[in-house]
Length: 486
Ligand SMILES: Nc1nc2c(ncn2[C@@H]2O[C@H](COP(=O)(O)OP(=O)(O)OP(=O)(O)O)[C@@H](O)[C@H]2O)c(=O)[nH]1
Image (tube, rainbow, N blue to C red; front, top):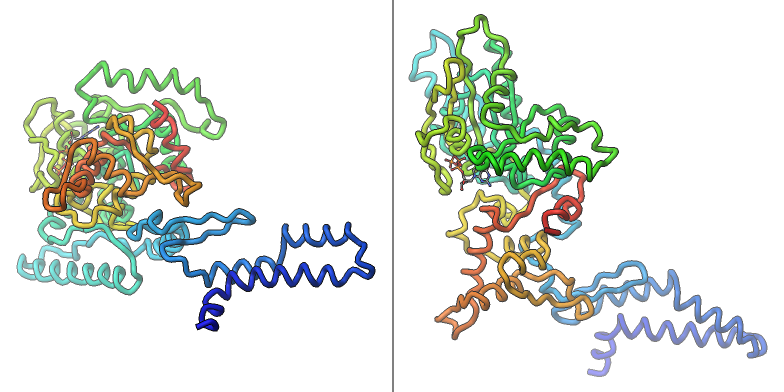
């Protein structure tokens, strides 16, 4: 029993014993026992460094068995974190890096299905068979990517009929507009669709162009638009900012752009110098229509119609954009994903015809399910595991901002008590549930965190709680600072 206790305490015990022995050894090594200066120095240096000490410390960290406690050592600073500070459904910084490297090396496998080749001799039956076979092959490739490489993908469209609609839109259009949500443009962009558009242009011999329309630009600050504009320009991506919500509200819309000029001067930054006021201008509907015409490849004559394909994930605002363009409610707008079911053509003017594709989720990488929920591609009402997405909200959006939006107070375990100062999912949800009186009757009146999560996550997706993802290599905290300072 005694032995067992001794073994159990070996890490910490050894660290202490070694340190005592070191001290004794150093005392003994003094020739005459009077060299106090050297002794002190030796003791001091033992305290401040070193290899031996690190070894003892490592041993301590790797063998300590304090239940519910995790250790992180940063240089000479040791932080003791409670395990509940790291949500098991989120990735650690190391895992994030590792996942992102794996994603990078498999990026070219995120394809959209291609329509197989056909000509006048192909019968409809034969084409149907080929399309099904090609589609199955494509699905197999993505399934393999998910399973063998352990990569999480968006819940991409698995209905061949929807992809057939996309094929028709892309074949028909001379400009393919991918509409993205400004809060995370790259998440909603399919690079491979752009490749497909270029390939089709080559095989069909009819020029086609790509355009990325960053909708919901009203959710971005001027600086955020500038950083994105710089990124897109450097990447050679044709882009434009738009706000379907503001398009009809002239005063609010004007503020978006007048604000630009004033604030642009105020927050002048050298490295954003190559971004012009035009690059970050939020287009009016007339300007958007003019951009479609300008982007389209030259036509043989002035009367030839130009087909503009509008493509995008559910809920990025395709219907709102079309409504803004046509200026009348001919297309219904809804907050429910997946409303637009069929490819429809809308004659905007004598020259411009819009081809509206059903909203569809492209294959793209995601780091966690929580990330998918926060980007609005997994339905919140059917959510069972809500702590991951809630923890992501609490991690990304400063506590003070959440408190202000809801008029609540959130307790977060302070750093001195092993916390991070950032609320955990439970701390944030508990505070919200208590403040709103969301109580679980079946659990003896305990706060209903699941209901709280649903409300908060829906507010995030709607933009009431605002978080914007920065371009690659930009710091998210810095990127969102102005939003949370208001
Ligand atoms: N803040 C803001 N919200 C917008 C904007 N455009 C659309 N929305 C909102 O985003 C939600 C989805 O808009 P829709 O136009 O229905 O989206 P959709 O892409 O047509 O969706 P599907 O029909 O499912 O394909 C609605 O709640 C809109 O009010 C915008 O420019 N700014």
